[in-house]
Image 1: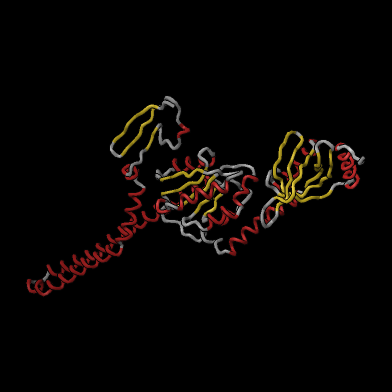
Image 2 (image 1 turned 180 degrees about the horizontal axis):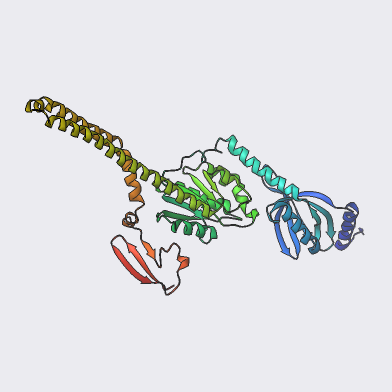
Length: 408
C-alpha cells in the first residue's frame, strides 16, 4: 500500500516550509490590481510583462488594520495621493501559506519614494515620446483666433468645474454672448482617458464650427489626474487642429496635457476669465482704431479745407482775371483732395470692416437673430440650477418676448 498524507497535512508542511524560509519580510515590486478597505486592507498584487502587458504573476495580500492606518497616512503625506488600484508600489511583505486559505502576503511597510519615482519616470517617458515624434509643441504653437466666440467644452455636465466655467462666462460684466457646446466625457478615474479622446474625435469631425476647445474639471484627489499624464490623451491634445485651453482644477500639479495645450490655466473659472478678457482686449483695440481713424480723417479734411479757404480768399480779393487765372489751380487742388480722402478711406476700409464685425458679433440682437434666446429673471439666467419651480421667467427672442412659469 502506498504511503499517503492528507491535503491538510500537505498544506501544513508547505506552511511550515514557507514560514521557515521567510522569517523576515522581503521588499517586493508589484502593481495594485485591486484594493478593498474594510478596516483591514485586502489587495490583489500583479506583475505584467513590459512588452505584452499580460499578467505574469499574481498574489493576494493583506495589510492589518493597525498597520494600514499608519501606512496610508504616511504614503499620502509623502506622495500627495492615496493608495489606489493601478499604482506600482514597493512593499515589505512576508509570504505566508494558510492550510485553508492558501498563499498570501502580509504587508508591513510601503516605500512611497518608489511610487513617486515610478510616476515621474512614466510622465517623463510620455513627454520624451511626444518630443521624439515631433508633436509636443504643435498645439502650443497654434495662434488663438482674434475672437474666441464659438467654444467646444469637454467636461462632465454635473461637474462643479463645468458649472463654474459657464457661470463665469455667462455673467461677464461686458455683456458678451458666447456659443458653447458641451461634449460630455468622464473626467477622472477608470475610462477617463478613452472618454476624453472620444470627445476630441467628435469635435475634430466638425472643427469648422468652433474657434477653440476647452477641457475643464473641478478639484479632486491628485490621483484622479493620472489620465492627464498618459500618452493617448496627451498626444491627441498635442496634435489637435484647434487651440486647446485647459482648466483641470489643480494648483499643485501640471499634467502632460496641460503642458502640450495651447493655453494652460489652473481652474475652469480662470479659463472663462481668460476668454472674456481676450474678447475685451480685441474690442478695445478695434474701438481705439475707429477713434484714431475718425480723428485722422477729420484732421486730413480740416487741413485741406483750410488750404482751400485760404486760396479762395486770395482769389476773391483779386480781379476777375486773377480768378480766371487761378480757376484751373483750384480745380486741381479739389481733385487732389477728393482723391486723397478716397485713397485714405480705402486703405482703412479693412480696419473699419473688422470693427464693424466686432460690433455685430458682440450685439445680443445679432445673436438672437441666429436662433438663440436670452432667459431673464432678475437679470441674466446663466444656469438652470439657479431656477426653481414656480419662478416666472422672461425669454427674449429676436422678434418678441414671452413670459413663462417653471414647473419642474
